[in-house]
View 1 (spheres, rainbow, N blue to C red):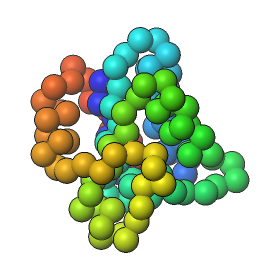
View 2 (view 1 turned 90 degrees about the vertical axis):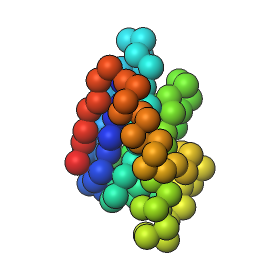
View 3 (view 1 turned 180 degrees about the vertical axis):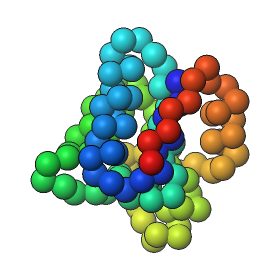
View 4 (view 1 turned 45 degrees about the horizontal axis):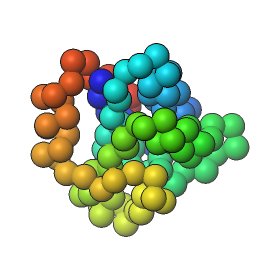
Length: 105
């Protein structure tokens, strides 16, 4: 299963990773791709929506988080070591290889 996140809205990002965590818990192989404003979620701090905690939880369960390198560069953004820097080619490969793709954004 692929999850595309293209927003920096804290609640939406938090819910996207809650979804990804739940999918992992019930046995799905899940990869999350952060694109556009979504790359900001890796370093986002919000008092009500702890996206970083959800990302750590996801990664700790074997989930893979990828972030668009071009999007990171445009925002002069790091990944806080929570995800791998990736490319549009990787996203194309991901979409082509999964049975289901879900988008948040």
